[in-house]
Length: 147
Image (cartoon, rainbow, N blue to C red; front, top):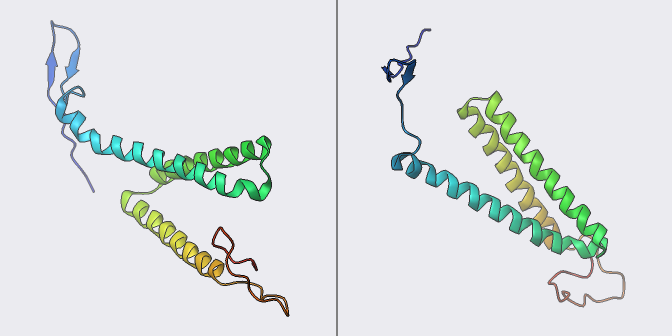
């Protein structure tokens, strides 16, 4: 299978070496074309760090409120963030775009199923109330006392 690649014409400037003419990266069309990508990157990073802080605040009381616990929590989030960049890089350099979409879609589907199962499991008490004790209802946080 053979393919042909067309190159832009060469132009000479003051009898010096040949310079390729191509799209100007400073043109307004080029910048407008990059705007959706810049907005998507900014929005995803913003949302990721918002979720990081909210989740850290939610799980911090479980492990204690010491500064060391908060530091470990942030460290874990940053390591997972780095792992996500590694995943994206490996996916981009090893698979064609169509397979990247399939792999990423499969992972998103698996995580959606996992979240649905976790939501179902947490909505029902996993342990029945002790004999002779009536269920006092939800706690102020909206969770059952008997988990």
